[in-house]
Length: 176
Image (cartoon, rainbow, N blue to C red; front, top):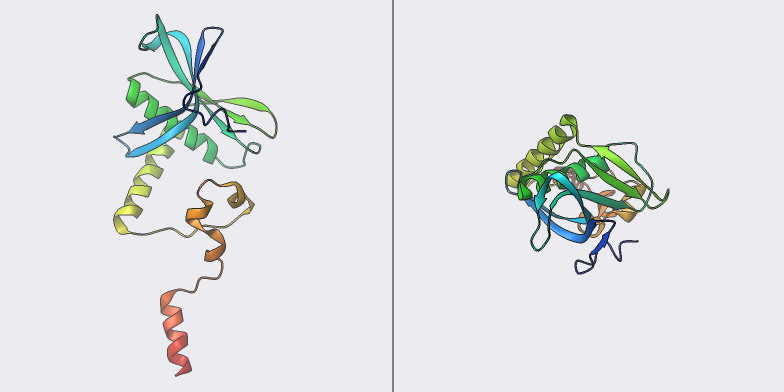
């Protein structure tokens, strides 16, 4: 599914819309870096000037997902983080973006609300706080772990049988 979306050298123009893939993004304010699956640059007077292009273009990210819409806001928060990065990089305002769900073969427009933007900032601060403390939060393993891109880093299966060090030491002392 991601073959074309992950090819940074594949871009095309359809009906005046410039489609770029695997675009690197960053927000220095939030300390985030990442990559958009697809960014569509739509002709718009509220957009930005692109090198070697005439006119103004509004960037609109499209995030591809394997499954179907989830019950929580995790996909929307990820998409909003991409929007915030693009806004900071290109000095533009983006009011909506899209999630494409492979299982239902449809893309859904997601409005970039103040609530979503607040969640992104909250989670970014929380992530940086964990990093500074050297703390890795416990994962709650679920079936979603199978298709997660950081499954091999997080290793949720190993966390199922983890015994806290204090309990392990106490068990060892009790045996003596």
